[in-house]
Image (cartoon, rainbow, N blue to C red):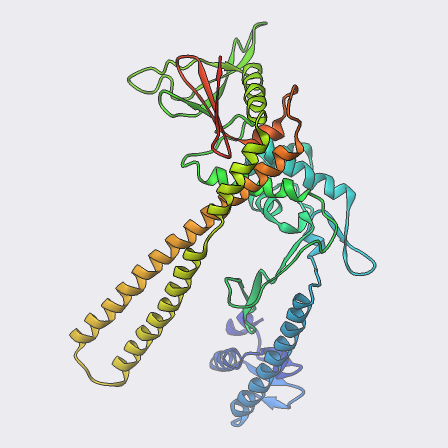
Length: 441
């Protein structure tokens, strides 16, 4: 409508009230002035204001300010109500866009069994080695609709489902918050406002251990240092002892009766020196893993004891936290010093050379401190990931039999870090507690 008015198609715009036109004083005045320049008048019924009137702009300024203040007050009240709900541990979900749960009669989440099956399938496919992109292709092929009812799945949606703690029955409240009540701008909560973590807030779709296992696998894939292939559970876990490349899936005799699938070093023919590590059939990999697993479990209690000792060392972040707190305070002080430096330069006459020298020195200190803080935060995150990995390893081997006779994909994913194949026929399995067990091919 405003564009039509600017194009000369409208002479008069009738509006119910100033608050219906805009709740932002600047927007109201800017738009009214722009319309006035193009010969379009605005009439506000409730306030009886014509913008061509000499007193019109003053009245609009006053009424727009009141409307803006009313909007701010409403926003603050709504925000207070939401944060009070968060503080009370009350969980709410965007049910129309949230796969797996419906709103119950009491207002709490209840499982939608049909949708929960899709969520379980996504977690299962991920633990079987598929990437989020591969999961999307599978779901599209099966004709399964997205949470919003669309036919095409996106990696963002799958990643969100795989990382959302609500599927294990917990809820992290106030992940995002509104920065600007006028523009409704949302921001990820990085500590600006309180967050609340509610355990066992509702019925879980995914077992908490499986959920943690998925988070550990996500972290593992990020640290590989190379692209992850999600063709199989063996992807990015079989390593060539000659060149360090991953083993990849190959098909032999694809068009005849002798067709079979094998795993071979991806870099076998890429370098000047050809890798001499042998190829492996799937049955061989499975049998050797069972052998290594059974060897590991012969001393299960000792393995658990060693893991607990490692956890005690890894989980101790006292020194890290102390340095992080110190650097955080230093960054806040430096930020204020930079602001004061700029303000002083704007308010008084001084040597710009001295000002630039002082400003650059402060900025350099700030950047150096920020880099160190990021490095410490990353180190703490790695320690937490390692602690979680060991905890899951302990939980997994406690539940399993001492002797395993049947291949298990879940144990391969949950217990094994990597398996290195050597040209002399050795296969060394490195478990997530760093134990290495050798098997002969």
